[in-house]
Image (cartoon, rainbow, N blue to C red):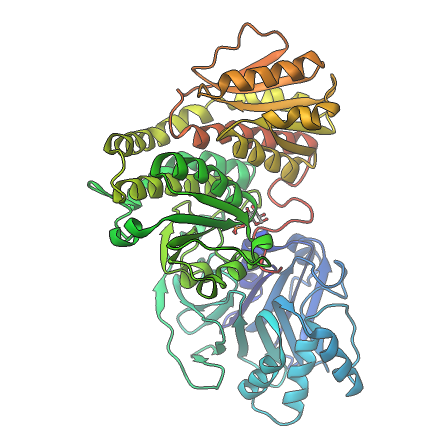
Length: 605
Ligand code: G6P
């Protein structure tokens, strides 16, 4: 993970680096640092353990420079200490920041140590800066030295480097980790994503794997690995400069929960054109699909699990869903004409990309990416893409990305059902229910007072059990994930029918049992499972839609989710569970937007 930002300008770039780091902090936040080339001709560098604010507090207010690089870290190799924080420096003349993992760093370290280099950190990154220094010391030109360095690296990297003897110049390279060039007027920038740069420029050039780049105030030069100059398109970012702004909300997570009705509506509009559903998808391709495999991680995996119920029951196509980290090391059997769907908010998750990378070798019919970040690696790697239009999601715990993924997945189900000559009334019903989603989501979000009261009770408990049946089971899983991510309460999700095979042993009067319930065909079965909990004294919190009548049951806290049961129930049912996790986190005083040990984009294995 980690975020990097770099700048070459006439003006002082320290505030630009700091603002960029704040915007990238969702990528990692255990230490932060910067290196710059002030007018005194020296290479200045500084790093602090903790967040960007800790770095800012420690910086000399008078520090000013026209060229610099900066980094916010999520530790992989080496714990979060000042010595391991980036930038890493060699011979007081080269500084490097890096996002990714260098897999062959141990052998490179031995080689460089034998050459007389002293290592100050436990990181894999430090080999990069010494390799670069060694190439420069041997008289190579900066770009040639960078090329020689990159050639030695195995793994993934986005790099930015400055050299004391090359003021006004920043070098960059990427392979497997993202790097974007911000094109300004008489100034240029590099960053891990466009959101870091939108306050200074809207013009972005997305680099491709293997690209080497050199930026100065006046120029951007991009080269392929053999140093042939290449052109990369400049695109205008649609991200508003205030995209990384909490507005009236206390946390990004709260803001993003509230943005869901709008995000769902925007996503729907993007994939409906009159009667055409997902017009960007080729009908003849959909007609051929005989099976679907879905790969994803974290919250995106849960979206895939929900989609399995939809696609199998409505389009009649068999679906398998697997976490990408397992799938990538398996030899799966692929039926003929299987479509591989990769779901990822960031489009950067290393395991998902690696799993996707096997699609050709495994013989899939085609690949379809469902992604929230345009120009991400995933969108470039897939044959077809359906974008979610959630807007920038900053909170590490994913909320609006999930509900927009579900929106796209239900639209995809409708398109697949239609293309395969399925029930036209069912397709109509899917679209009708989806059409109600933004307004119904608004109504559900208005119930947050009730959820706040429950949060007070849950916040005191060390554990929570989430139960669900059928399509509510993945919603229970997502609810449990949200709670553990942001409140650090141990939460487990179980298929309600599995209760008696183990988790029932945990149930006593101290255990809150949280249940999304819907008035669907499995309700009677779910009610029986709830009796089993109740009989053991467990405290039940049932988030039930309007059709569920459980009022007769004592000791069951029924929280009405103000919406009728419909095909979009999973989209609505996760909303109170997101709120619940959020409020419990707030009550417990955790850092809900940046929970400990986590990061938003997991770009390492
Ligand atoms: C991290 C994030 C999660 C996210 C998961 C998958 O763990 O903290 O919120 O669900 O990665 O990320 P992706 O970008 O591939 O959806």
